[in-house]
Image (cartoon, rainbow, N blue to C red):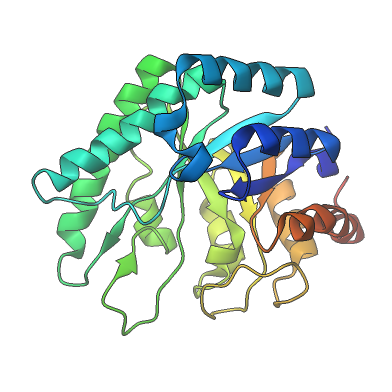
Length: 275
C-alpha cells in the first residue's frame, strides 16, 4: 500500500459514522477514526441491526475503522463506583468492536492530580490489564496512546506523556495490547520524536497519529506547516524502523486533514522515504 493510502483521518465526532464512511469512500480515504460517545454516534445507539449495516458499508467501500475512546474518561480512576463506570465504558468499546469489524481501539492511561500519581498509575495499569483480557475474548486490539503534557503548574496531568511514563504500561502481557504513537505529543517533551522512536518497537505500534505543534510547547493540533514539526524527518525516522502501518491525521477540519495527506506524502518523499 502506498503512503497516501496509509494516511487516514480522525473523524472524531464530526460526522455520524455512516456519513463518515461515505465521505471517506468519496475522497479515497482508506482509514477513519471515530469516537462513540455523543449524539448520533453514541455507543448506546448501535443495536445489532445498525452495526450490521455499518460493517456492510465498511466492507463495500474498502474503509477501515478504528475506535477512539475519550481521554476525559479517567482510566486511572480509583474511587468506588466511579471506577466501575470507567471499566464498563471501556468494556462497551470492546464489545462493539467485533460487531463493527473495527481494526483497533485507542485507549489512554488516564490522568492524575500530582499528589496521587503513583496510585493512579497502578489503578490504571490494573484496569488496562483487565480490559485487555476482555479484548482477548472478543478478538479486539487495544492501542495505548502517549498523551500530551500539561503546563507544569496545572493540577491535572495526563499519564503516559513521557517515554518513562508510557513504558510503565508496556509490559502488559496480552496479545491484544499494542501502542498508538502520537508524534506531536512526543514533540512537546524534551526527549522529542527521536527519543520516542529510538526506544519503540514498531512491531507493537498499530498507528502513528499526526498533527503539528511547537517544540517543547503546549498542546495544539495544527495543520502541518503551522508549527515547527519536521514531518519529512519524522517519516524517515519512523519508516527506517520498519513501520508500514497507518498514519492518522488529527487536526483542524475534515478538509484540512484531507488536503494535508498529499502535502505529507511530498514531505516524506523529499526526505527520501519510499512513497
